[in-house]
Image (tube, rainbow, N blue to C red):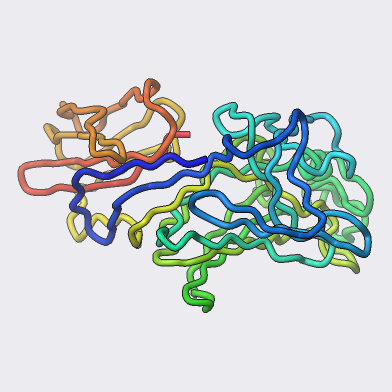
Length: 332
């Protein structure tokens, strides 16, 4: 249910880490091919947070909030499959994960941090099977994303700029902060249709910029709107909810950053590091302060193979004779 990593020593501008706690939900009890269901509407708790859950007693169904699950149905794109993720498994092929529902009437999806936790570092997210299949093919009142049918847009077929967005809101002492994080679960707004996508893999959402919080809430928005609100299913899936017991305000590089660029970020195996100075030292540390890679760049650009690293957050430092720069990198 949790993994705690203690940081040995870090000296970074604008960030403080003591420990990272990751709720991967694997220790929660479930039968085979099932999900959390509670007709009293009781929220449920892991080490670092309380996840809201609501049950509608009038219609006798799950209304809104979060349900942990081990459902793995990736073929049924109907209402009969509310809990399955399009990945079929949790992040990193794990058995359990969480499915979130906004419900018919925009119900609250809120997570309250435990007293010891001060910030949300982030989490992995993907679409539910129900949501993914409906956005791809249409169904019920929802159109297939990109379709121009009934939109009266005048666009060529397949060119309607649909999108489906998750927004994370932060709260401190009951007051909503101005900071938010946005993540597009689907985006068809590109001029080149080949770039249109619906998320179908676990993807990291960085929330460290939200800073000091005691709870976060989630809200879904869509371009496909009908008379009763959003037409496409308002579900998403979440895993590895990561928090810190220290305030995180984001990693900042300061006024001199060596022109450091790291891409892609997040990455799967290879990263490219670029800087203005050759012979700079590149050091990568895990969140326990252990050096996992160390090299001297012979040119202003270097490709680094990090395929052997476990998924998670790392700190990359570039040092020259006159400057030192740190960037956060994330391995999927």
